[in-house]
Length: 77
Image (cartoon, rainbow, N blue to C red):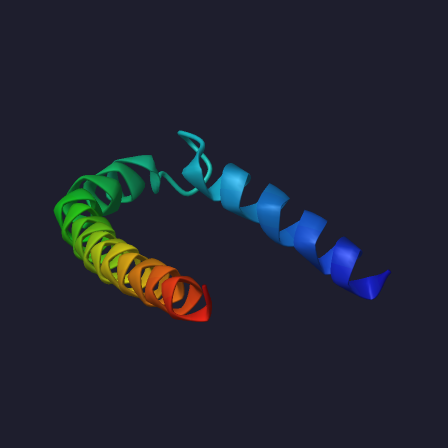
């Protein structure tokens, strides 16, 4: 319950800080968001590349296992 209250207070404080006239942080927030977008894009791209490589490796391993299973079935017959 305390965590919920603290969360609500922090969200309200952040919104009020960004409003024009209160603290006037909105231009700084926009500058931060603009600056963080390329970094975020690079991180997301790197993760996507790693996931793609892992997917290719998994497919190759699944094909190997399938071939081994087929060979094992042929030997049993």
